[in-house]
Image (cartoon, rainbow, N blue to C red):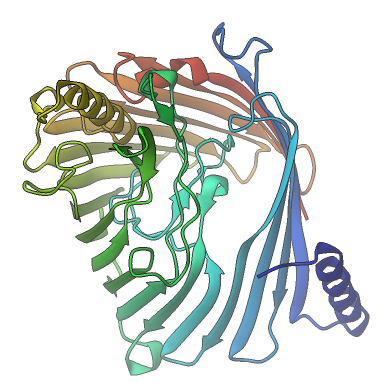
Length: 441
């Protein structure tokens, strides 16, 4: 679908102006404008200028409620980059419809159709059951939700007893999967052959691009839980060697999953858990790319959080990933020694990018935050690390200040470290100091 931005804005402002004149509260127009400046934290020959990203962005948020049962949301996003990770030496501009969703509601049902972001899961930062959304990690921003990507989808929620039941049934059909875009370190790029970093955009309504899922959720006074199933595509691209063209190409592998999450209160603590068993089509023995692509795996997150002194909160989560039928890349073998070497290199690159370098991989996250209704200051420290041999970690401290209504200034750092043969350690050159200025209207 093609959009004419001048016509879209003319329509939006005409409608919002008419709504203001008639004091029609069913139409609202808002948004945000923000700038992000990211500088390298360490000296690196890859970024001689010291700038990782310099950007100016704007969101236009248009909401209309034509009737009691219907509503429409459209969020247009515009990004101007003086420099970024995708086009390091070039200025660029992009625009897109971040969300465009029509909603129809009754007492028991809610139907959403259109471009939408569907995040699932209750844990913080690491969500095994987040099947339907994706993230662009090459877009640097202190708010992880800004990186999140959606896709055209239809979602139906049904709550029995005219919405009074604690149980909700959800069904989702997604026209095509969104693609997670990773920061790819130089150490993951095989040499000697043509290499395509990112996959092409998937076509909609194809057997190998559509996604389906369902969830049963229970919402109680002190306990929330859900069970979910999924059939779709791994949004993280992996690589394979195409012998006919002597190229290394990215691919998004189809997969199935079952999972669940829960949260409950225990005194002053909030306990959360989330787990999924993920089964890629190429993840078991006797499949053509077994050992080269990520195998079947089980991801689990268990954590607890509590507030204290009113304005502070602390949280710790334990992470565990177990790969079923894991094979070390050095054991991959083909009739051709040259092909064997190439396949082993690609398997190691995939393992580095998707964090499946060992059969089991324990880790943890820690968050400590300060926020107060009586203060214009807030602060947050987030740490994630993995403890398998060759540990690696990310430390993200940030502090924010609100100088006036609608304004927020944020400064902080993303500091990667640990063994450089591990996923987070390999990104040490992308460690950064950042500043964001944001105005919400």
